[in-house]
Image (tube, rainbow over all chains, first blue to last red; front, side, top):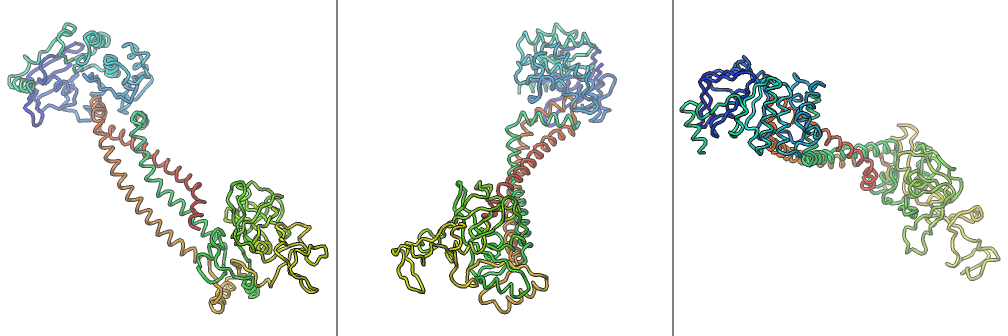
Length: 231
Length: 401
């Protein structure tokens, strides 16, 4: 599903330097990534999602080399194949629950808002227990409920790959457990590949594989990571 | 994308309604002023030019040309120096034009809390000249009759058969004009001109209000109380102040009304002249330019109005300049507001981009919001300008004349 080789990435005017020699993630697997802050977990997710472009190396998602795609093609690829869940939920305040879930269909003509997609959105919202909040503003939901709406949005297009960046970072342990189970259900029911960044080690037992960034990075990258952590 | 862009933009505007309302209000106000000024001036120009074009020549006493023209066209101004009926006779005698004397010296008293309106004394030719028709009741038949312009009738809630009083010009002049109670015989059809806002009477009735003509009980009668007479001989009678003139003309007392002096000396405020041809008009103008410059003047209303419009155009240019400057300031402020707002919404745009929204789409979303606010602002400004024109047209006319 994901194959990374000789990846190098650095932010301009920063000591941060991410280098990965080799990384492969199997399809329909649930992988957790742990590691110290500033070690590049979120950066790696953004590279896999095509939001950031590596300085060198090859990143292949679903047999597609992201470096070979234009910006527009990468964006479309992301919209169609990758669901994103963020720590801060990143919902649109002025849209209600249903409209937030349907947002991916409203931002690109290639993926129009069809009745099937409406039904899918309503079904997902019902599945996460928010059926009664369909028309409610997302600002009136609890943190856990907001994250569930974000997960519905990520799953709307039935993406083969789900990238979650500390989705439980702002949630209490019970809600965190519920959210992870929701994500894992997508893996189980729809064969989605899940790659999730977390700091919560108590959740790791849910995952088939754990990547520890502290061990995984090259020496120079680790040094930079420690430096970033100190900052 | 268009439908979705409008949907998302509408949702966003609703959510950030405080900001949206402020921007729309700024836009509306910035556009409203120049639009209203333009509409009002166009209306004013149309009104004043059409009325002037429909009036070939105005003749009156020497003095301000503008005062004379505006008085003869719109009535609702301070009367210029009076001329006499001799001027109307002169015009008629030249054979170049038909003369329509106007005597606009008095107003009615207020009725039903509505302020009094000008009383226009004229002849029947004026009604034909201006194409004024009676919509209700009858025309002027006898002394003391009046017909109302349609707006006067509507505002004062008067109908044929009702009475209306003239207002004395000076309440302290005991020997002067008494209020005349006039009988309303008819109401004119709307003409959408100043004729809708005045009361018309016969010229002789106007002179009765002036005190030139009057009626009182017969002093030669043997039944008259001697206390009312100061002097009595076979050939003349001198009455005391105890003899009061009639203040209403009725079929019973109409025969007692009479005028003193020669009609050619009676005052009028202006004469409208309707030349029979272009040549006649030129000849009449020539007559006044050559031989009557000492006492009278003959003006072409279109020329006077053009002078007036030139002043208005200068004012309009000033208003436009002010509007352009305030528009620039508003534009800069709105740009600042938008830039700050975009900065505040950076996270939201980042999210959209992350989930797969193109930068072009994000720009088009913001553009659609701007478009919707602009459409609202322009629409509100246009409606407000249109309403302002309706409300302020009469006010502007009263302000200018």
